[in-house]
Image (cartoon, rainbow, N blue to C red; front, top):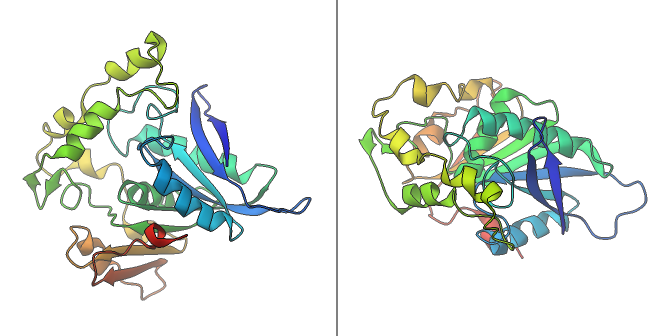
Length: 262
């Protein structure tokens, strides 16, 4: 494991943990697998991250776990909402950075469940040159009907919404800095849930962040379970006719294999 910084063009640095394959030969190059989340890689998801990315590292991939801008150990102000333009622009720069490291063969994949699946789809829709394939579980391009905020059009508030509002104020582990330069911008960031409650109907607010699945041209594995709110996206992703998206709808609830990797 190597902790590093990924510089953005505006001077902000995103915090990354790289899970490197052991026993690499001199000059050997590897593809990278990116997981790009707000969920605090150094404490909130550390245990689960290790099992997933170590699995891939043992099989010749560099696992890259990156905190979003303004979350966890990353610098900067949290974006104005989830799946923001800033998040996606940063994601393009992260992919480009991974593709140009000395250990990289220039190929990058993305994977994730829920948020990591959502932004994997969104990055694939932007066509960054180095992004070659994605796996998206419990994810959708329908941010109004099929995401957590308005399930089937009904307003929904639970502990996830509250957690994301409060997570913006947590400094990164293990220092948990109380410095005004770190905490000030995070505490001044408006709660996302209040913004979402101002947009209670489907429309441009929910749709200008994504494009149709048909615009994805790289290999894509779209995974969900039958009773998930994201099942509509999987059922509507017809793999015939040259489409790059391969859907799979599982019968059982436990469909994220990384939780059983060891």
